[in-house]
Length: 61
Image (cartoon, rainbow, N blue to C red):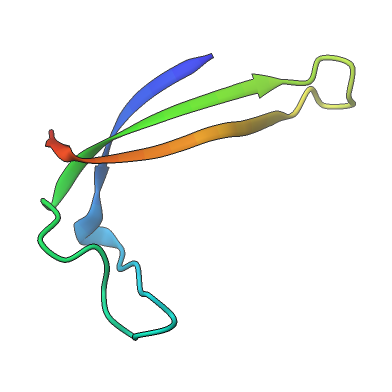
């Protein structure tokens, strides 16, 4: 299953642990994420696994 969502970065801060800087600088407050998930029907509870999580910071939403 493929999903596209709008991420609001104002509610979180991503920090580069090597530099201590908030990353990525200049990113719009809201931007698109492409997400791919698969469901394991043979497992108890039929869990979902995120296989792709790609921020598209050049695509504000």
